Structure formats: C-alpha cells, structure tokens
Image (cartoon, rainbow, N blue to C red; front, side, top):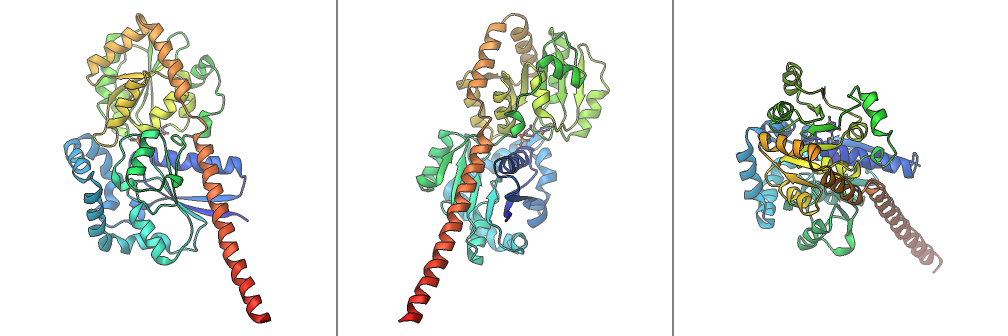
Length: 397
Ligand code: UDP
C-alpha cells in the first residue's frame, strides 16, 4: 500500500524545493514505491493576496528591497510578535489555506517552508486529522520563530544550534532531531573525476574552475562579481550559474570574457557542476553551502539575505571553510590569492568542507519520517484493536 505525504513548500528561492525533492528522493530510495510525495507550492496556490505573489516578489524583494526585507524579518523575529501576527493573519488566510486540505487525509504532512507551520497545523488538528505533522527546517542557524511551533510532531533541524533554538521555542526534546540539511542523494553518489566532468560540461581542461552562483534565483551583484574576477585574470576559468534570472544570463552572454567563461541558466545537475569546480563564490544560501561542503569546495560568501542567512556567514567562517568578501574587487583579489599563492589553505579548506558535509542527511530524514508514520499507524491500529476488544468484552458480558 502506498502512503501519501503532503509536502508544503514554495519557490521563494531554490532551497525549499531542493529540500523537498531530496526528501522525496530519499524516501523512494529507502522504501521503493512505499510513499507518494506530493510537493505543493502552498504560497502560490493556497494563500491569499499578497502572499500568493511572494514567489514573484521574493527575488526583487531580497535584491532591490533588501532594507524592507531586513526590516520585515527583524521586526517580526520575536516569538510573541510572531504569534500575534499569525493570530491576526489566521482569519484572513484560513479560507485559502483550507483548500490544501480538501483531499483525503494523507499519512503525513511535511513542511519545508517557514510560512507553513503554525496555521496549517492548527487547521489540520481542527479538521480532526491525526496524520503526523513534520517540520524540516531549512535554515541551519538563523531561524525565524515562524518556523517553530511547539505542537509539531517531529522537528528536523540541520545543526545543534538549531536544536537549541527549537528547544527554546518550546518543542519537546524528544521531538527534535539533528539530521543535517536535506540535499539530493546525487551529492552522495560518486560523480566522475574533475577532468571528465569538465569535458562533459564544455569547460577548459587545463585551468581550475571558479563557480559563481546566487541561489536558485541568481541573486545579488553576480554580474559585477563575474566582471571583477575576469578582469583580475586569475589563472582560472569561470563557471557562472544564473539560475532562474534570465536577465542576468542574457547580460552575461553579451560579454566578451577575459578568461574562459561558461554561463548556465537554471541547472539540474548541480553535483556535476560543483564536482567540476575548485571553489565557489555564493551568497550564504543554506542549500548551496550544504552542497558545496559535500563537494569539498572552499567558499567565498559574496553576500547574504539579512535575517535568515546571517548566521550562515558566521558558521562558514568559524568552521574554517570559507570567508566573507562582499565587494567584487575583494572577491576577485581572494580568488587570485587562493589560486596563485595560497593553494595550501585552499586544500585545507576543501578537506575541512568534506569532513563537515552530510551527504546522508536526506536519508536520515526519510528514516525519521518513516519511523514516525509507522509509529502513528501502530498507535491508530492499537486504538482500534482496543476499541474492538472492549466491544467484544461488552457483548460477551
Ligand atoms: N539550484 C539549482 N539550480 C540552479 C541554481 C540553484 O538546482 O541553477 C539549487 C541549489 O543547488 C540549491 C538551491 O537551488 O539546492 C538554492 O538553495 P539556497 O538555500 O542556496 O538558496 P535560495 O535559492 O533558497 O535562496
């Protein structure tokens, strides 16, 4: 019998969908055909205006509207304030959110998005559904209180720091597990060696490759960074992933580059691209950082989204796997320094990154979900058996 999992996500950035897909893949790998995971963009399809526009506004908001985003994040980042806001929003959003639950009860509800915790869980319980509600928190360090709801059945977090936050928010210790960030199992499989991957991707064979990425949306001053690096003429090539940012891609394609440069739009083979490269320049996106660690890439953090990505910067630098350099000139200088004069620290950081990477995280998450669903099934069957047993006793008395 296939069990249904309803997965609440949204394409605000690329990380939530990547996490949902990684978990779905891991369930299929461990328990073939036992689970059917339906990943829903709940903001886009089941939220009222203006929330349903967030998928389109997110990139401009965290790029051009960065101060507004920072203000929104910080001014709501207290537990009481969050609860007040959610209580105020509830009557307004519940009509649309209810649409999510006009279906047969699934075997579990999985949420990988901060906005879909309190309200859907509250509604599910009001409906009388007993399916376990599981939160997979895809921010490893700076966790907005909206992620953390004490009534959740299982809360899966990426780091010990995140576990401490979940505890402080009132989630019982036995319901929290530190599993790491869910990344695709493709990162756990052996990819080809660097040179074969470079050949496969049309990259130059004789130069180290610098990967430049700005999350799923191609965020931040990627064009300026790419230009500064190319103009510095390091002994390297550039591999740029513009993600869903088509404007950026066109802008990059119009340039005549000083060093060999390959430009991609949204790629679906990130493990291969990372495997072909030697270091990464990225905003502090948690998904990309988790993947880069597994692939042993030293990290230059070129920026961060205020609020949710701030802690990631501290984490990367404290762990000795990268540095923060925000100005394009500083980034270009670091690339040059690492590749020309400081190959030793580059390989030290690469080794540290590999040691910290958790390629098995999605499998651990899948096992935890499976165990919880089994426990729930046993408890429901136990309740039914007790009820049947007591009926028999009653009839025979
Ligand atoms: N990603 C991808 N293809 C691309 C660009 C990004 O699959 O062309 C994936 C990337 O591998 C990562 C996610 O999108 O899993 C980005 O997540 P992150 O948390 O780094 O940043 P976000 O986009 O959520 O801000």
